[in-house]
Length: 549
Image (cartoon, rainbow, N blue to C red; front, side, top):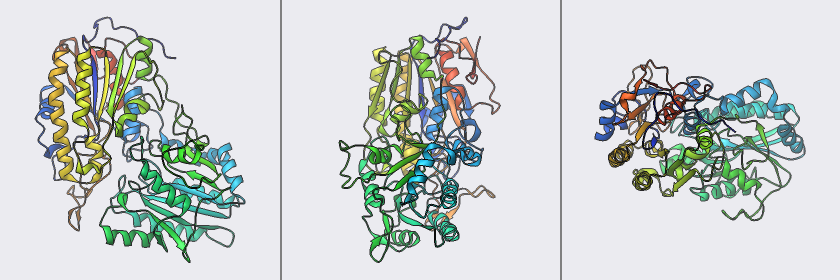
C-alpha cells in the first residue's frame, strides 16, 4: 500500500473539490478543413482557452510509454498516465521486447499453447493491422514463424479488420501482402491460412459490456464457422465494399470456405491465441472462451475445450485470461491509491464507453476500489447505436449526475470522462463530430458555474487527439487527402498535443503555472491535481505544472 500524502506547507488546498475533466479525443491542431474542434461552435471551451492558464500535454509515443513518437496515444495508456503520474512501458513495447529477447517463446504459456498444438490446430485471433494501439501485425508474423519452427503443422488466422487506428479503407494493404507472406511459409508440413474475419466494430471486439451481440457474431464466425462464405479474405472485402460502401471497421463477418466447408472452425483440443495486447476489447471474447456453463451473455452453442491465451493479462484482478504470453506492466503508486490512503473522498464518472478508463485504467489496470468507504464509481449506460447517429452520446446525463454529486459536497477529488470527441471522431463523420463537440461545450457551460458555486477548481484535459484531425493529411503538403467522395476521412487518433486548462476563480494567487516549453505530458496531471488539493506529490511522480508560492 502507498503511504499517505504529505500536506503542503504554503497552501492548504482548494476549499471545494478538484475535478479532472477528460475531454476524450480533443487535441490541439491548426485550424483546417478536418479540425472538428475548431469548426465547432464552442464558446465555453474558447473562453477557457483564452481566459485561463493553459499548457499543452504530449499524449502519444514515449510520453505515454509507447515504443516511438510515431505511435499514436490511446485512451488506455493515456488514462494510465493521468491516473498514475508516471510513464510505464506499455503493451506494444512490452510485447516487442519479449519477442526480440525470446522471452515470449520461452514462457510457460507459449509452451502450453505450442505443445498442445502439435497434434491440433493453432488459431490466432486479433486486430489485423500495424496500428500499434491494440495489436501489431508483426507480432502475429513472429508467432507464425515460431510456430513453423517448432513443428506445428496446422495454423488458422481470424482477422479483425481495422480502419480505425489505420486508414479507413486500408484492409487490402494488409491482407494482400500477408497472403504472400503466408505463401512463403506454407509447405507440405505447414498448413497455414486465413479462416475468418470481419470489421472490428461488427464482431468480437466489444468492450465494457456495451454490445455483447458483437462477441456473439464473432463467436459464430471464428469458432462455429457460421456465416457468409468466401474463397478468400480479399474476395470478402471487395464484395462487401461493393455491396455496402462501409469502411473497414464496419465490414460484415465472413468465413473462408473450400468446397462449401469452413476451413478453420475451432475444435476440442485446439490452441487459441488472442494476440491483441490492449485489454479493453479483448476481455469479452476471452471470457467467452474461458467461462463455465453459467456464462449467460449469449448462446455459445458449442464450447470447444481449448488451450487459450491472451497476449497479455487483460484484467489483473479478475485474472482474465488465465493464461497470457507477456506480463503486463505493473503500475503502482497511482493517484487513486494515494488519495484513498490519505483519506480523500473520490468520485469517478463516465458513460459505459469510457467508464473503465476512469476506473480500471486510471487505477493502473486494477479492477475494484482502493476504499469502498471513500470511493464512488458511477456508470451512465451508453446507447447501443452508431455514435454518428447520436453524437451527443450521454454527455448531458453525465453532467446531470456530476452536478448532483458536486452539490452533495461529498467528494474532494472528482474525475469524469466525456467520450464524445473520441467515439464520434472514430466514425469518420466530420459533421457528427462537430455536433459532438458542440454538445460537449453545452455541458461545460452547465458545469462551470457549479464549480464556482462549490468553490472548486477544474483541470480540463484530454487523453489523446482525434476530433482535431478528421481528414487524412498529406505529410508533404499538409493538405487533406482527397478520396472518391471528397476528403478522405481519418478515423484514428492523432499525434497532436492536448490541452490542460486550470479553471480557478478563487485560488490562482496561491500558485503560478510553469512555462510551457513542450516538456509536459499526461503524467504531469496527477502531481498538479494533488498540489491543488493541498498535498505534495510523491517524489517518483512526474512534476506538477504549477508551483505553489
